[in-house]
Amino acid sequence: MADLFDRILAAHTGIRPHVPVTTLEHSGHLSAETGCDVWLKTEHLMPTGSFKVRGSTNKIRTLGEEGRRAGVVTASTGNHGLGVARAGALAGVDVTVFVSDTAVRSKVDAIRACGAEVVVVDGPPLAAEAQARRQSEHLGKPYVAPYNDLDTMAGQGTLGVELSEQAPDLDAVFVCVGGGGLIGGVGTALKKLSPATRVVGVWPEASRVMLDSLLAGRIVETPEYETLSDGSAGAVEEGSVTFPVCQEVIDETVTVGEDEIARAMRLVADGERWMIEGAAGVAVAGLLRTAERYRGKKVAVVLCGRNIALATFLTAIML
Image (tube, rainbow, N blue to C red; front, side, top):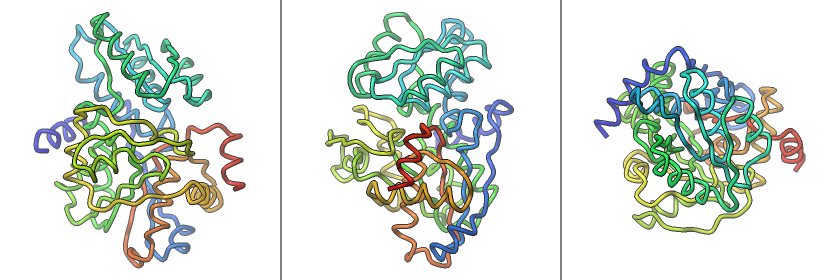
């Protein structure tokens, strides 16, 4: 963790000015709803609509000149690919993104709009990831991992540094968990800079592979079902560097159902006039589920993204 923390501190300055510091906004609506002092980390207001731009920008920053000249390959359900596409465009690096055929169309279109080449792979996100890695090795191009990379995770960890600077007295922070890169980076930063802050990992009940792996003490396969939280869905790669970090930094785990995610998205729309994607709704739902334990406490919720099709969003908030 010491090496990862050093990488996070280097990323905190290194990714500027291409990646802005997002604001931490007080939510009177959610505070009244929960009895907590609720603050929202506005990652959905990032230029790409997601926190993922942090990790992808940092990874491309840390590549040598030869790696940048060769171009990079990645795999994504959408947000990571969009982050890599933007980072590549700003750095003059060619980007190829492999996506599952289940990826949200609007996210894939946005990746193409940033100038990246998109390759669609039949099968789940892990199949796209495996093919991207094979192509990376075959062509000798660096692979920019969505989560299974220390430099990517360090970029995500800059969010934790920002939280410690914006609210050093936080009692807890709620984070949606997929592959573990976001919570691993944020948790590592907070354990050093704000050790009294509890790191709460939240999963949709329909996609909880990292949670099941943590409970098993090793990375396991687990059933995946359709979820509003498509940005956090998918298996965790065997040997992922995020797994041992998650074992160390997550203090509390929560799972939430699809109705709870939809309600959380609706509450944010009602109170803040923000459209957020399902993964962000997961984190809000985690707070709603555990609000009694944090009543009167100062808590932050990471609104990790906004990239959701309007029709899907409207359907969700009408549930």
